[in-house]
Length: 117
Image 1 (cartoon, one colour):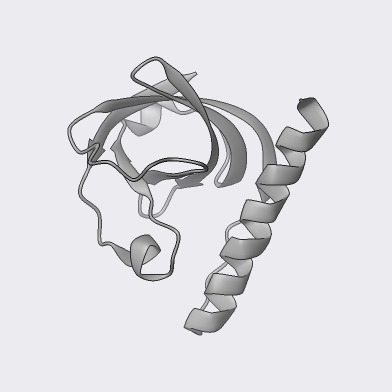
Image 2 (image 1 turned 90 degrees about the vertical axis):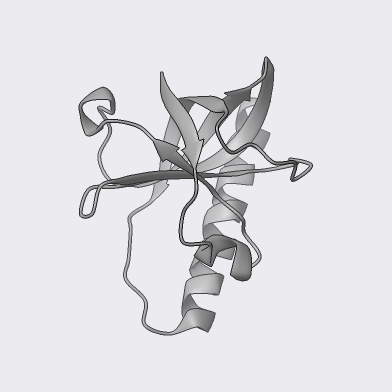
């Protein structure tokens, strides 16, 4: 389990319909390979299903919380427990292809949670 404080990112996820929380988290605290993970995210004592993204170059951790009300969480702490890697990271120059990839990843995350509940 690891976590960090929610910081402002570039806002791309939100413009694509999948808002993410960018996490200020030192790379030394994360012992997972880059990729997209189904994860449990804890915020203010409540556990959310989440799509967790870990990037190495540049270093970045961000998360899309499923079933989150969208309230302002900047400056708040989030903790994560990755459950299963659902996909590798891929680079897309076409925005529509990126949106489709994100939608597939979210579906994969939901399927992981259906299997474990």
